[in-house]
Length: 53
Image (cartoon, rainbow, N blue to C red; front, top):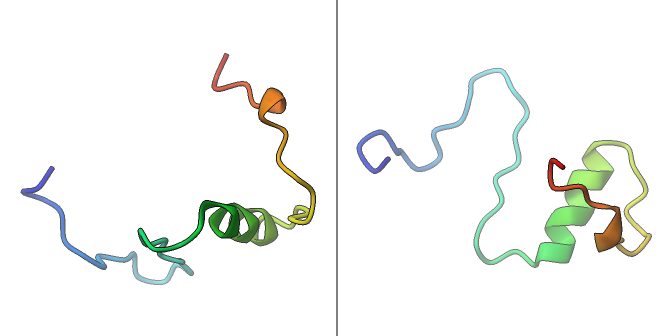
């Protein structure tokens, strides 16, 4: 993977938001939910996750 990796290699013409290692997980999740138009002010319910099952 190191052979093809290039930092900040973003797609042209697509609105993107880069998540870095310094961002809080709760803030990242809130941003994703907000971008999807979902409520970000409710606590996460880990039991609701299916993990592809």
